[in-house]
Length: 333
Image (cartoon, rainbow, N blue to C red):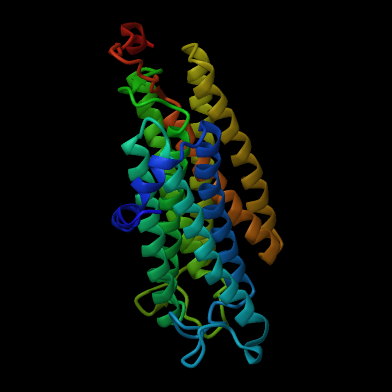
């Protein structure tokens, strides 16, 4: 490589790679999907850290101990679990980096996809710092809840980026009417509330992440009524299920395109499975395996909700010199 080439690679490595490599559309989609899958994996493994009581397996951050960057033999199982989850952050960074390189090298370059990739990257960095704060404040349940909610935002961005790899960059065209879109936004809002209340259930519940000495969520000096918060969570879950079923019925009634119908059906099935897991774990005193499965289900429900929202419009691939035109008939659906 020439000196000029080395200088260019150092100055803008993404542009340097993009000039010399053009990935296929399949490669780009797989790279973006990998980042989404790894996001879900690290959420579930983070739950495993809490459920095994390994939240303070590494008692400090960014090092595992004051003297060691990694877990030591004396720290035992909990140190291995906590440090292993920290290592997965690097795997997630690599997956997001691979997605950024792939979309930046695609021809023609789609700036919007690259922005989604960088948004993922900074969310990962922010959540890594927040994870360190969680450790430094001794697993304060409010910081744990914020840690999970930021992961939820990351999943939304990753899901959107994955969907956008299957679309063009034309202006979005609605596939349903305004009333249906409003119903979906209500579904999204209640789903966000469901996830938020779920973090409160976790923060007030028995799985503290380290020991019974870790304080749980409270109001002033009074602990939250875990049973009451759990019932509220269940009610919100039923509201989401009802809204999803109502959406499917409305989409059938207006003869909507197959895309929104399929995504709504998928969400409904995921919600049913998640509901079964939720009730079984509640009546069996929260076994760790079922709690972990419920966390995975939470991620899948959120992905399903985002996919329903994104299915309400389409973005055709622009042909050179041919402007897109909205179909006026779509606005009357």
